[in-house]
Amino acid sequence: STTKGDSIVGVPQHFVENFNVRLTSNVSFQMAKTLTEHLRGRNNGVAGVEALTLPYIRNDGKVYEVACNLTNPSQGNADDIKSYVVEWVETQRRRAAEKRAFDKAEGYKFYVEDAYRVGTTEHQCREVLFGNKTTKDWLDHDEGVQDRFRSCFGG
Image (cartoon, rainbow, N blue to C red; front, side, top):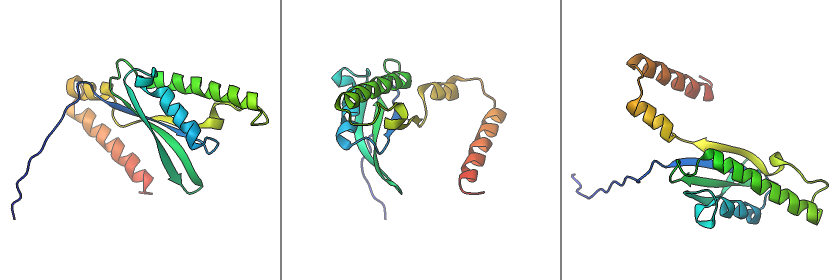
């Protein structure tokens, strides 16, 4: 049977990059939300960043992750987010020390498990569109990606 319908495709004005900050089990939902608020561009955080707090479930329990869209990476980028995360950790350390909530004011790894890019960057896309790579370069790259993918599954 044939189905007819409409399709809409949108293109943002700027390339959008993604960056996640996975927090440790030492960080409550309320604390995670303070990082989300701290990073958001509309709250005087990193310019162009939209962020939300998500639960991240794994075998050893639930932690939280702050997922960020960098809506204009030339204004607010991954390095800016990392700097704001360090600033947030320092604030948490001060608060913990004031409340004597922990035996000592713990460091970055007490709060942040990982902070990482997700997906393709604007630079990588520009390289594909306008770079000088040969067909052999791309075939070699694709083979490397496939090898890494296979190794994840024991192949």
